[in-house]
Every structure is written in structure tokens, then in C-alpha cells.
Length: 185
Figure (tube, rainbow, N blue to C red):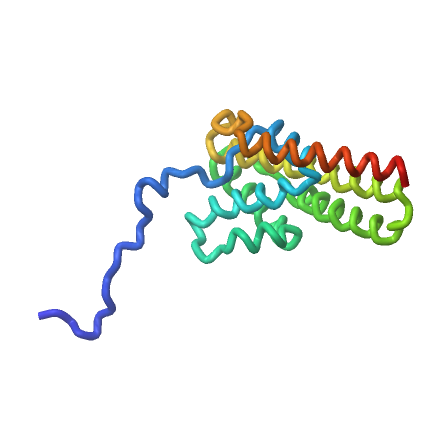
């Protein structure tokens, strides 16, 4: 006779197809840099989204879209997860905090410079180049994420797809307009 007060039992284990997925988004570091620079840093939203989406395997209540849009608030959490997986794989310790703070600081500093000196085209260009330096910590984090995922060079995602080329082309057009505007203003 069944116990009427016993909660139903469910198999909560992940299917084999999901559990074999790498813990992080894999990408060649040179590809991250190129797409970040070509898209004015907008690639970072996608970069964060893909990493957080991969983390849904372990923590289903993560909202990757929200964490990617508000990535400044979740940079430390993602970098900490990468560092923890890297260490758990026996690959050494990564002191992620400095890189996470550098990313956040460059994004915030760029906005501050842009707001204070909004009338000055040179300052606007400077703020763009400041935010472009935010690619340094993303490249470092990607290298650690790749190693923790078992693909140190990011070979499984090193080539540029059609979508990558389309975004890069749009970014190049935007770069041209920004440079023309800066030179004329």
C-alpha cells in the first residue's frame, strides 16, 4: 500500500545531452577581442549571455538575459564561477577580482567621461577608447573559461560565422560614422 502523505518522486538528474555541455561559452580569445572591438563593445552583452546560459545547467534559476543586460552587476559573479571551475579542474587558481573590477571601472569611467565632456568630440572619442580597454578582462576570463571547459585555445569556436561577419560589418559602418563625426565636430 502506498503512503498517501509521501511527496511524489521525480528524477531531477540532467539528461546526458545537457550534462555533457561545457560549463562555459567557448570562444577563441582573438575572436572575443575582434568582435568586441568591431561592435563597440556590444558583443559583451552576447558574451555574458552565452556564459550565463551555460551556467543554467547548474543553476536553473539564473536569468541569462537579465544578467547579460545588467552585466556590470554580475561581472564578479561570473568571473568567480570561472575561477572556481578552473581551480576545481586542477588548473590552478585565478585571482579574478582585479580583472572584474577593471571591466566594471572601465565601463563606468567611460560613461562618466562621456557625460561630463559631452560637448567635446575628443573626449567622446576618449570615452570610446576607454570602454574598448574593457576587452582585456573579457579576454582573460575567456582564456580561463576555455581551459575550465577543456578547450584551452577555444578551437571549437574560433572561426567567424556569417552572423559574426554581419555584426562586424555593422560595427565597422558605425565606427566610420563615429570617426567622421569626431573629425567634423
